[in-house]
Amino acid sequence: MRSTSLLLAALLAGVFLPTIGRPHDTMPANWCTGPNETPVIVSTFSYAPTQLQSIADETAELLGSEGLIAEGLAPRLSDGRCGIVDRWNMATYIARTHCSSLSGHPNAMIHITGPASYNDSAHHSLYDYSHGLEGACVICAVPGSPLLGP
Image (tube, rainbow, N blue to C red):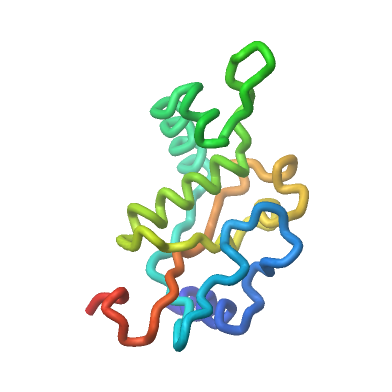
């Protein structure tokens, strides 16, 4: 619970993953700006490297080559075949799937807190499943909102 409190404090302080200047941010720049809205953590996740690899493998098998291309997880090669799956994109897809389906809040946004390689400007070349993945699913809500449940 302490780590959730620290994560929320970082969000509220505005020091959580700067949104300006990072390529393809996982959160819109003008997010959570409504009257009295505040970011609220609804779920956290921490994928160990083997768990992340397993989910990525299952996802690739489920989607197949055309699905991987359609989801932007792998490029289509000039000969029509599916290229290598981009691990950063797959990790983002896994986190978004967690936040949209497993958190109970389909509009939850992902905030990846680690590893550093995921948030690095060279993340497509640096990030690897062996680094794991940690973060939170966050929604914008007015305190006391029914979105937050009982």
